[in-house]
Length: 140
Image (spheres, rainbow, N blue to C red):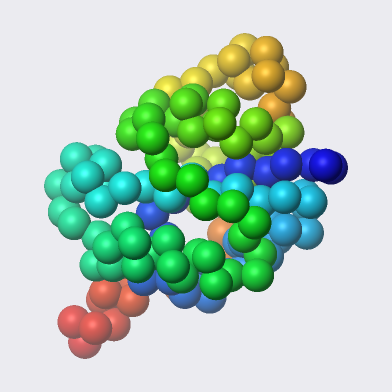
């Protein structure tokens, strides 16, 4: 198999920004694995439940032509177990993380990535659409 890409997230209220991100992932690699955050982890991290349940979010991602595999984020705040399970060459994240400490968030270091031969790349963030923005529209 060629290049394997890993990305993770909640993918609540799946929207065009998610589609564009995953499309770009599929253009970069031959195999795209999404580590999907569990409802329990989302609540622990954000102190609120996702709008769409894990099973429903998984079903949407399974229908997305740009995703080859979905795995649960089994490590919660520690992403290393899910990354080790996916065995990627590349981890892709949105450029909205470029000014935040993604390494701390995911609980790995550049040395850890280097040990596994994994590159971290940023994919441009789609402006004007997000789950938060959709919730604001609904509040109207």
